[in-house]
Image (tube, rainbow, N blue to C red):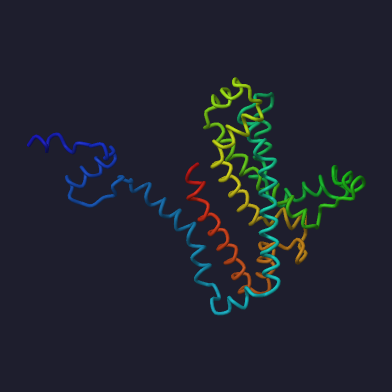
Length: 292
């Protein structure tokens, strides 16, 4: 009688939610989720899951599996895939070199207009990619604000080149790395840096020897996100770099062109992008992203 009045007693391995759920099962005799998920939350959650997974399932179901080897062995596919992997990796490297110091500046430094700078940094996240491509043309094109000087002084022309693809992908992918690294820096204890400086280390040495190893998982996660975003970039790339096979035609551009004339080839190319993205994210998630 005493145990029935007092109800279930939590132990060290049992949380409050599990106790409530377990108590409800014993009282009502009906099975329930151990976490006690309310039905008004469970149904929209399942709907969101179906909404995100259903297009991928449809891609797998409608894939031309019989003709897939022939579709994937064409020279154009491998050129586009190779170019996509090279440019996405280069864009992620650019994002690392420029984005990590920028994230540190936003997380650690105090200066007027920091909120405005953060808003400008995250603007490419919500800016339509085509608008980003137009902005890159106006800034780095042959008649652009900076591009005119690059062309006349150094003979450097970025639009409609492979380097232009890297620039376009880095422009849209860098904010993902900056946000990830800034959040990790804010969560890290700055007293370790202060202790290093009191022992005679410079601010840069403290960052390189103390801070950077602490936030390495966040940096890796941001690099993965930036790489994946660069791999799938379309709008800014086609606007700023064009669509030239072997030079600027990445996999997303190949999918778009194939969809107009050969839907089976477009599905095959989409499967390649899907497989590459899943393989990279799955391979790195357990090592870095889960640690962050």
